[in-house]
Image (cartoon, rainbow, N blue to C red; front, side):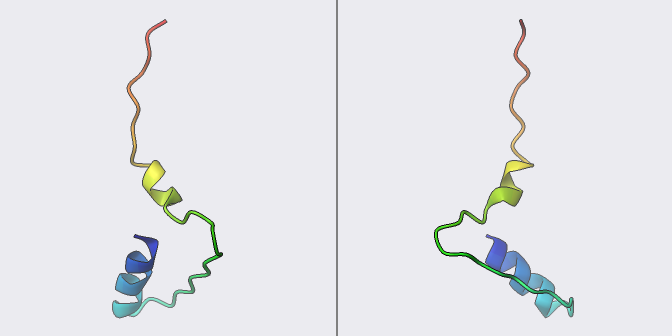
Length: 41
């Protein structure tokens, strides 16, 4: 997911650098779009 995003931005001419670390999840950007329902107390 993040690699595809970087590729798309590079194709649009953006100056981008992507560093990946082994065994590190790189889908953290996805978590911002996950909205959990509010719990009532």
